[in-house]
Length: 317
Image 1 (cartoon, rainbow, N blue to C red):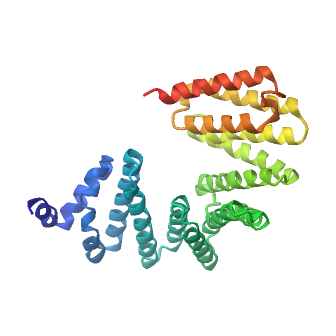
Image 2: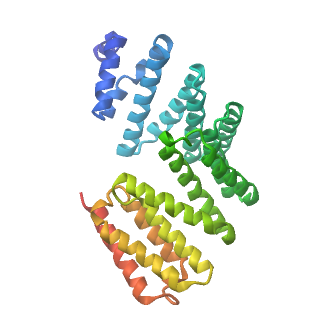
Image 3: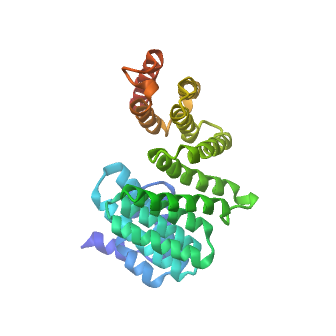
């Protein structure tokens, strides 16, 4: 038919231009119009051009998933991630391949394919060890640790998460020019490790990690020029820590500091509103000082008011 003919008669050079323009405009539907040429591109184009086409198509499916929620996009994302893993290996870009394997593993986990995710994370860890890529070791162990914790294998999970934290600080990103990447890696791992330690009542071990997390979170807010969700989260972690240590007054102070951060930065919360609301809801259900029967009534009312305000902000266009 004519539509099919129009797509196949476009040269690969013109196709690249069209995909590049559509990707720059975030026109995911236009990018996906050309996905049917994927096999031809992979068979005839340079590895660099194949990688560009894969990434553009991946981004288009992510945007499509956000826009429509169609399971078709999720299936395509998994397939394309697997293709890119193999392409990066062929190109000899082994660190990028390791990172891509971890991203693919995370997608598999989110899709409920836990066994496949475990296999991918294990493959990434082996690749990182073979080439001395601590950043890959960090992400792989973080993923494996979370899977183990979810499966009830707490001792194994904690050991993997501790290993991920050590790897984040030994990362090849540790030189000054890549310090921000290293810090983000460490933050991601600390988020998993702190959560796991609180859940297993390892309070002595978690205390210095909460302090380190706050240090990194405040530095991130400074770099961004606006409040980060991580800085808000650090208040919640400190409130948990103080409560576990039997210091309710200090725990209440951290909750008030959290509320002050949200009030003082109300105009800069776009993009983290849902995260902030979810964290406040978790705090309300977990912290004794926010317990409706035993907690601080004034503080409970302040948290409830802030939750309503966040909900209103989320509904605004």
